Length: 367
Image (cartoon, rainbow, N blue to C red; front, side, top):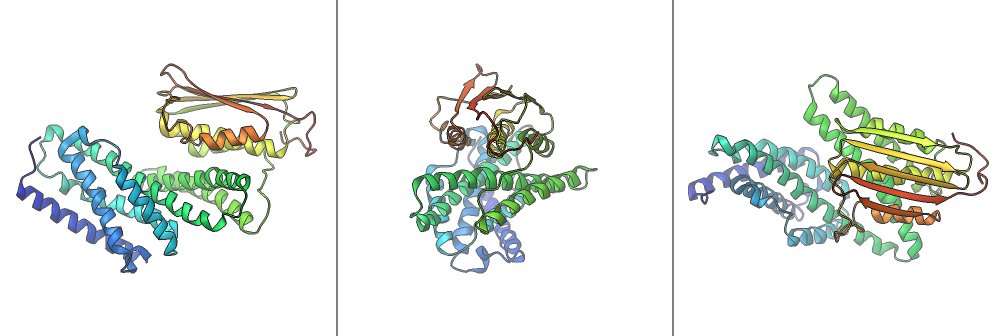
C-alpha cells in the first residue's frame, strides 16, 4: 500500500490525540492512580500511544505488520512494572487500565480506518484487533513479570523450594482464575444485550472470583494450602461447564475407584488437568478435547488429547511457557512423570503417570 500522506498522517494524529483524552477521562472517572499521579501519567500515556501506533501499522500495512511487539517494548514494560511496584501502585490498576484502553481503541478504529478501500477494510480491521490484543497483552504480561520480580526481592529469604511452590500457587490458583474472570467479563461487555449470554458470562466471572477470593483469604490468614473436599472429576466437570468455549466439545472420563487418592492428589491432579484444558482452549484452536484418567492398583494414568494445531515441543518457549514448568513440578512432587506429544500437527497429547499409596492416608474416599 502506498505510504500515508502528510494530510492523512495529520488526521491520524488527531484521532490518536482524541483517543488519549478519552482514555485519561475514563481513568479519571475510575479514580485510577495512573492518571491522578502526575509523575505516573506520562509513561501511561506513552504506552497507550505506542499501542495505538501498532494498530495503525496493522491497518495501513496489513498482515506484514502482524508480528510480535518489539523486544524493546517488552523490556521497557518489565522496567515499568518494577517502577509500579516501587510506587506502590497495585497491579490491578494496570489490568483495569488495559481493559479501558482496549475499549477506547476499539471505539477509535472506524476513524483510524477512514479512507481504506472497501475490499481491504474488513481484513485490515481484523489485523488491527488482533494486533491491539497482542500489543496490550505482551506489555501487560511483561509489566506483571517486572512487578512480581521486584516484590520477590523482598522475600528472598524464602528457600528455593518454597519460592517454587509459591510461584506454582500464584500461577495455577490465582492467575488462572483471574484470567478466566477477566475473559468472562470482556465477553459480557461484547455480548451485552444479546439474549441470555450476558447473564451467563456474569455467572462465570462470579464463580471464578469466588474461587480466587477463597484461596487468597486462607493464604492471607496464614493457613496451609487448601485441599478441596471434592474429587477432581467433579471439579473438572464444573470447570468445563463454566469455561468451555463455544464450539469446543470436552469429554471427561474417569475409570477406577478414588479410595487410593488423598485430598492432595485430587487437588494437584485437578490443577494439572485444568492447565491442560486452558492451553487447549487458548492456544490449540481445538474443537474437541478428551480427558481420560484410569485409576488402577497403585497407579494413576491420565492423558489430555485435543485435535488442535499441535504444540511445538521443539520451540524455545515450550518448557518455559504454557504452564509447563508448573505442571511438571506438581507431577514430579507426587513422584510421577509427564510427557507431551505433538500428534503430527493433528493435535497434542499430554500424559502423566503417578504412583499411588497402598491406602488413602487421609482416610477418606472423595468419590
